[in-house]
Image 1 (cartoon, rainbow, N blue to C red):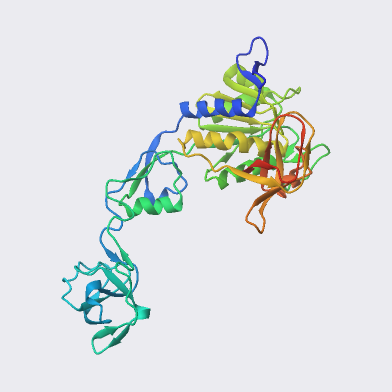
Image 2: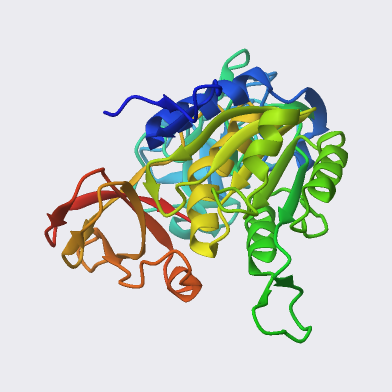
Length: 411
């Protein structure tokens, strides 16, 4: 592994580091700037990161109950395959009177078992006649009975801080009695595109101009992740205006995401500006696409300055911005890692670690396969639109054979 080196003798930040080093620096930054905790209605907490363990206030189920519509009875009484119907027990009612010998009760799904009952005969297997129920096959003792506490015991920790609140977890929190949950606040995010050549979609293009695709790409990706980003005016190729706009955003937002103006060109003002008025944690990562990516701080904001090519924006957002936002929210639950077999061979011709576009699918045998997209240049946005994952290819040149397994990142 090549050691990180300063950008110049006067710089104190690492540059040209590998992807793992950059992500480790980003993780430490996110932990140091974790978002505050807020209380949110359980019904509105989906997608948020839990900030405190959830402890069950009740057991699940809270009482012995029936898993099916049918008849509740004492198994020892049923040898004759005939029982007297003593009444009906509905869900939501208090426990019925104890069963007498040879009795059963009609019962609905979720209704408490009468005292003494230990088995359920489902309605489809029963015949009612003259106040009695008849059946041919005796169910095993305990059939279709849900025992109190078999899922959760009161006092159990059912959800741990740091997990993402999915729909099932929201349902579990509600089921054990929690109307409010402690969650980490969502970071506020400002999005900037850069460059005098940028024109809003729908307006006429002059020679040399391009439409503002990166801003819409970033806004859409952030909304997919549950954020409510704010699009700021395009940063012009004017260092004074750039500083003014960035300072305004940094005073009001938790995260600033820019795209473009971060390399080493004549009009790439962001690195020098952030070094002067803020702080840089790293600049340039040995990856393709997206090498010029920069991570820094300005006022209250973490600044992620992404390269300008649209595929570089997608790759660096996936590799850096997405885990940064998760870390700021206190997520400790590991993200799902996916691996797939290459459907076709691939010749990796350059030494940097590569995030290559590809299409993930599942074959008829239930195995994940990924097909690399040959349109691998960082400006080829159509290739990204035709793909659904990034293949993680290690540093170094080599040939990947069909069937070889690689990690894939979904987007």
